[in-house]
Image 1 (cartoon, rainbow, N blue to C red):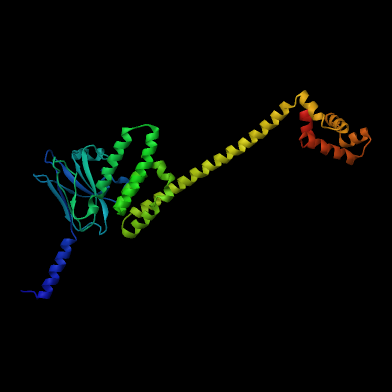
Image 2 (cartoon, rainbow, N blue to C red; image 1 turned 90 degrees about the vertical axis):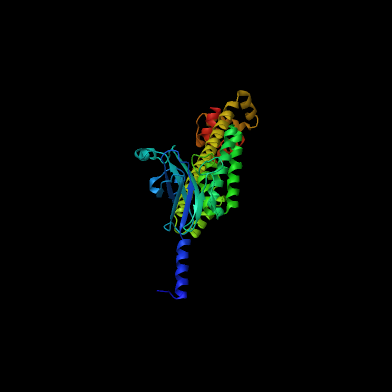
Length: 349
């Protein structure tokens, strides 16, 4: 039975569309020893490197030439971060070896891809695996380029370990990573860079917290949510940023509280010391100098205050009015630099 030409064209276009919608990730590994190859879809960028069974979506066994391939149409339409790793662990040791996500017997490569992508991982000139990505998209190898910059950074930090050099390297490399992310332009490449500089174990962590509001990470979360709406990346990033902003705010509040506490303690200490020094410095010679500035009546009233006489008793003894006594006492306080009878007694008693 022959199909009409229009139906045949529609069928061919449909088949072509389905074929184009398939991903093909292939490559070569060396054939020494038994090995398996695993494809993982990474939806948690804090588990971007390592071996995590819950992330594995496919496995393959290389043929006698070392060739392997993953293909299908079950991947998300938008870009995601993927990992292909080679495991040399015996099957009965896999669970124990990969308990914390780390495995010394595995090799891995990270890349960005979508449902429609085709890429290959050929051996390099020295037959080393996972050192090159061949693809029609520049985005595929962006994470590898970030890893290359990261290796340069590690070498730089390891070359000179002085505190001054470490501080200079921190600022320099933080800026270099930020600029490199801007050059790459892809939000997943920038997210990978974020995962490096914001890692609590990295030398950048404090610098990252200090520049949290002006590093553009909130805008990155917006782009991830807009361009990759089906992923968890934007939501995870925004949650982390809010937590770090709270941490930074609490630290600032604590530092501010401690600063004001120190200022209050310092002012109290200065006041007490000034009082003690003033009291200590009033020697007999100093007292004579102060008394010379007082009138005879004020000197008499000063002595009566020291003798614990009340205002009424002073007025009666000196045969003056109570208001006159109060006037003399106010003048006396002003000349002595005190504010109460207790101050007078402590200095002159």
